[in-house]
Image (cartoon, rainbow, N blue to C red; front, side, top):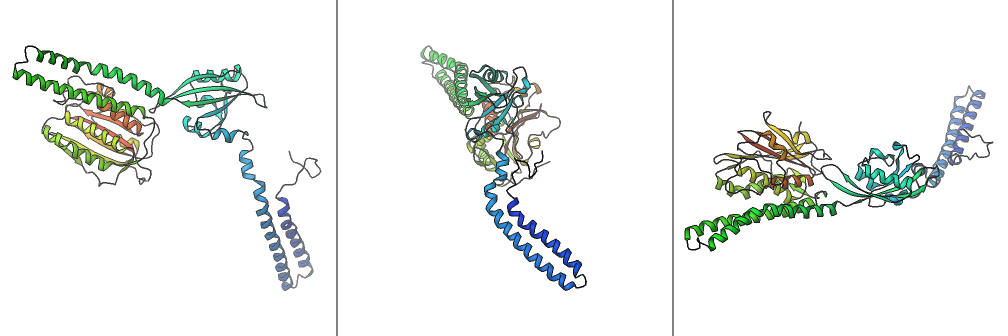
Length: 468
């Protein structure tokens, strides 16, 4: 609807006052030039003088406009007012809250698609991965328990709670609380949905329960062996020096196995507890690989296995985002595992691929190999660096690949030599890589060995040049 000057509600725009001098001066100049041109058409010098006079007057008027606009524009606040004229008065307050908060509106109880969030603060947009402040509720939350709690607050007028488990590689557990807010001016029912992160509490409870269950199960066998040998040594073998030395050696091996098992269980528990918190830092991946090769070199030589590095770049050329100790633990577990399953006089090959896309970083190199992605990052970074560790063992059948990162899973018929593992090494690798928002893949050709690939996001300032 257009307003006219006679309309009682007409208000002249604020910019009209400053611009009026230009309009008046320009219009007067045009009229003067036309009139004077008609009168003195035969005298070009007179017309030129008149143009100079009109130009000077118009320039002074324009200068006046600039001064007036500079004084008026801050008061107008046009862009700010236009951007916030539809926002509720409490929007800035909600947006400053650290917990995810949504304001939900609905008109009819039977209209299941009519539930809309009319405001989502910055924490909610980050947690729910949305780029907008309003939209359909079911597009961001599909959990039936949470939606039911929202309905109770909207149409029942009562506060309701639900547990919201967010899917993905980095599992999050939220306590969803819905509270009624009354009725909006347009008649819509309003409710406030607050999501409180309880991931740490749930992880601590689950870690404690898993630790007790795993420890009691896995420690039972070595403890039974120790108890049996102690009884034997206290009985008929106490005077047999040969038997005593043999039993004591076995007991020492069992005690060392228990020590490694407890260390791995504690390490896995600590990693799982903070798995949802991405590490902050930079790690020289080339330096980490070389340090692991130096530390495991004596073990490889003892087993008669060669450690071969394929064209590693210089130190400092490949920087990834992460925790150095944990990344070294990943590489060490993979190399140690490869050494155990590689026969003497064979080689463990370690290679590094930098500045690659996620697809290229985890892609198999042997088209004959059976391949399985053990972990794929939820939020893909632009570029990754990949560490590949290949053994020369008997390889793995395709059916075993999906279960390799399960706790205590062992492939039947596989021998790892005298220094047996705890069955937790690959589980630790997976959880560390997951904390780093990276990926883990395995490929294997039976009779020729297996290759594990762990890839990590590059540091933010790494050059952006991806492999094809």
